[in-house]
Image 1: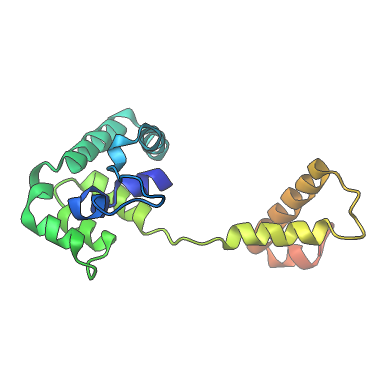
Image 2: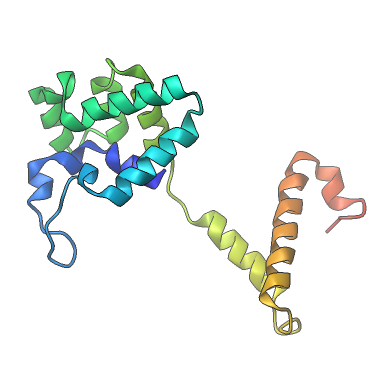
Length: 170
């Protein structure tokens, strides 16, 4: 999904962005020139729409976006790409209107908030389970206990009483 978000961000295709040196001093290239990114994009499209007709349609619309066919080649689209006041989702709302399937995917993918809280929660649970008193747990057993604890927490969200009472109460 990260690769798909990268490919669907219009600023990564603009010459002004591509002329800025990449971290480490290398030359930037458009996302469609990286085979690893494009492999991940096709995997994401396949995962998003198991229907082959829909995935083919999204893939062809993605080609139009990458090659700047139709409305994507107009001056407004290029200017809005450079404008910091226009977010990527606003850009897709306005300029992706003629390809509604890819527009819908782009808005869903690019609207996702970026957060590490879920990973931090798992590490917190891991430190709760594998502490000084239980330092002889092997990694497989600790991982299993973290998995069980995390799933019980998720299940408890659906039934508050089961979290406080019953055989798996905390």
